[in-house]
Image (cartoon, rainbow, N blue to C red; front, side, top):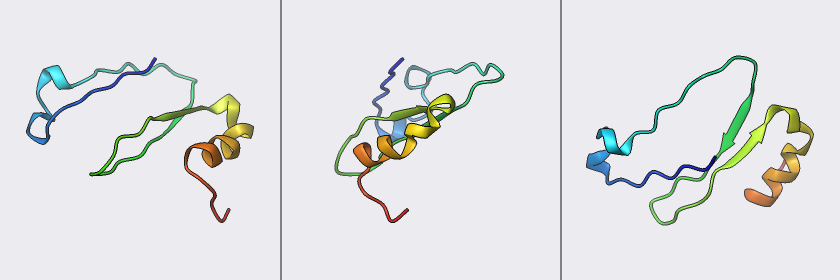
Length: 67
């Protein structure tokens, strides 16, 4: 589920700008994102069962690394 929350810096703790989450046991999700003053980017979700694809996703989303 993709959730986008847009807010101004002074609205960061306003209830309409917050998203609640519920934690269930046993799962593992890693989220990669980009934060910049100049641009917006999508979040990439990496589910633990897909760890063998992590490098391919990172290469496509982030770019080449030295690892």
